[in-house]
Every structure is written in structure tokens, then in C-alpha cells.
Length: 188
Length: 294
Image 1 (tube, one colour):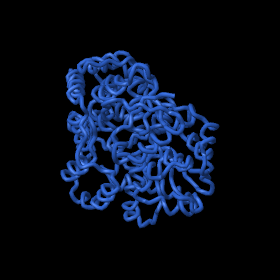
Image 2 (cartoon, chains in turn blue, yellow; image 1 turned 90 degrees about the vertical axis):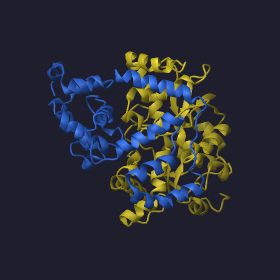
Image 3 (cartoon, chains in turn orange, cyan; image 1 turned 30 degrees about the horizontal axis):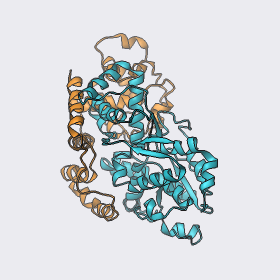
Image 4 (cartoon, helix red, strand yellow; image 1 turned 135 degrees about the horizontal axis):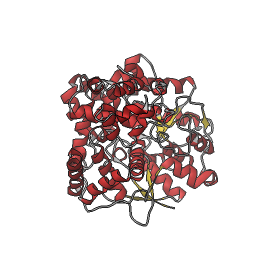
């Protein structure tokens, strides 16, 4: 992808770069495919990271934000680590996740629901809560799989590995003030 | 040596064995851990999927709470480790973003000076700061005859360097050899366990878990030794589900490297959280360590 593409203001490329610290490296992509070839989830993806980057450059905004690529990503950072052009590919995937969630462009994935359930617990208690996550998210999204999880949940519980109540930090109001400020600033 | 300590949510419950063994081993090696008072969740990979500034602000609260007289922070969980080190690096490399994070912290009466705290993983503290001689000196029950597959996972070795090879790290290999264990070559040692994918797409997650178990079995490992609670949960907790899914018969204990350190140091296995693993380690330990009271 040539650098001149980035000079076009108002393109999707520009938008992705602005939303990603270090994202300006995107214009240096040479389409070598090291990212896709390194990806443990490549086979699950409609478009590998290399293709997705080409689509970003081609201003194919709708197709990118509806792609399943982001939701198959396991954050292993092999692509980022191996990129010969030092593009923070995993971070770009996170940017695309945020855009896709904000505009509700995703489909056929429960990943956004999991992220919401998880972060809601953090916002409310300051700590994650595995039992709540398992029951809340699974009952909502996958009751059948919940039944299969039963024996494992019991094993975790009998070994003292699962709490039935969440822990709340003492200064939860302080954390919430910080989070609210972040939400306010990022809404601008 | 004194370090601030960030256990993270997993170590409170699900990975309590990791927390207990970290504390026991640290104590014996003279590593003074001071837990950050009232720390909060790092947001794992989930917060970054929703709001980057909020994700970093949530993480930075913990950095801001590190006491001024300490500049080293230890995190045993790979996700916590990466989130803490990544947030600090983002704030250093992108000062405008750093200012925004500090604006958020200010709403809670806090402030963090980017770069002030050095974030370390527990493995690095033991291997780099304590070192071979001091570790070997403490070994009273060598792990001779025990074949271990060292499993590093992703987020400690990538994308931010911890002075190990991001493709084929060696630090845990060295450490386990100091304990007398037979460390097997484990080509997939830095591959992914699937992370949160067990919650989203089981077939995708189970295949990644299967590869790790299969490879360890092919190399005739007695157990996999790991350094991340997510890896441990996926390989241990989901092992029977993976067996059911593929018709395999894996029976590999998945232990934390600090538990194995503790065993070699002669610490009571109960204090190290042995028995909390789903695939029990007791038979192999008894068989391989020659009837030692483990």
C-alpha cells in the first residue's frame, strides 16, 4: 500500500490510523502476508489480516467492519511480532472491534456480548467475576453449552477455584469516576 | 529485593495455586512482594475491545497506586502483565494519549508519570534478578527424572520484549533445568491456548488446545509447566472436554512454574496449591520423584 493513500483525508485508512496509537505504520504494509501465515485463527477468518489491511486501503469500510476476522483473533500477537514493517496489527484489530461494536456491524459472534458482560462487572465491582460471567453470558447466549459446562464448573467449585460472589474494591467510586471520565472524553 | 505485586483477578480464585506458590517461592528467595492496595481488574482483553481510553485508564489506576518508593511491579498473569506494560508504553510513546489517561485518573484524584514503574513478569524476576546460583542453592528435592514441557503462551513474550525470544523463548527452560528437571523440546511453547475463545467458539479453541496437548504428549512429557492462568485454565479445565470433542485420551497435568519451584525447594505441596488442578499431578509426581512425600 503506498503512502499517498494516507494523504487522502476522510478515508477509512485515515480513520483507522487516527483511532490507533502507532497506527500510522499501516501505510507501510507491503502485503507480504506474514500476518495471515502466522495466524492460528487464519483458517476461521473470512479475510486474513493481510487482506483486511488491503481492504482498509481500498476504503472498503462496510465489508471490513462486518468481517469475522476481528472476532476470530485470539490476541496472540504473532502477526505484530513478525510484521517486517512493524505494524501493530493486533492493535488495529482491536480498533476494528471497537468500531464494529460501536456501529453494531458484527454478526454471528458472541464476542461483543462477552466483552460487554466482562467490562460491566469491572465497572460495577472493579474486579472480574468468573461465575457471574459464566452464568450471565452463557445463560443469555448459549444455554446448551452451559449444560456441558456444568461438570467443569462443579470441579472448579469443589477445588475452591470459583467464587459465587464477586469481590468489590473499596474505592469503587474512584474507579467509576475514572471510567466515566474516559467514556466522556472518548465520546468527543 | 522489594517489588510491588499485582496478583490480578484470576489469582484470587481460579488460579489461587499460582498466587500461593508465587508468594511461597518469593518468600524463600528473598523477594519481598507488596500487594498494591485496592488494585482493580486489568480488563483482560475485553476492555480494549470496547474503549481503549477507558481500558488504559482502568489499568493505569493500578500503576498510579504503586507506592512512590517502589518502581518495580510484578504481575504473574500474562494478560495483566501485558496490559500493564502496554499501557505504560502507550503513555510514554504517545504523550498526548498519556495526557488523556492522566485526565481520567485526575477524575479519581490520581496521577501516573509514564515510565515511572517498570512492569515485570514473575519468571523474569526469578531468572534475571535472582539468577541461577541463588535458585540452585535452594533446591533440596531435585526434579530429576521428571519430563516437563515448558509452555510460555503469548502475551509475556510478545509483542513487547522481555529479553527472551518471542518465537522460541528459553528462560523457563533454563529455570526448570536448574531444578534438575528434564526439559523436553516443545516446539509449540509460545503458541496460543485460545485465550477467551473457549467462551466464543469451542471448536476453534479446542483445536488450539489439542495441538498443545498433542505436542507435549508426542514429546513424552509428564506434564506441561505454564506461566499464565488463562493457559492453565484452558489446558487443564477444558482437557476432558477436548478429549470428548476429539476422542483423545490426554491426561496431562498443567502446573505453574512456581509450583514446581516450590516442590524443588521442599515447600509443603499444600501450601503451593497442589490439588487444585483438575487433571491431578499427584500420580506422576509420586512415580517420577521416587516416592517423595508430594
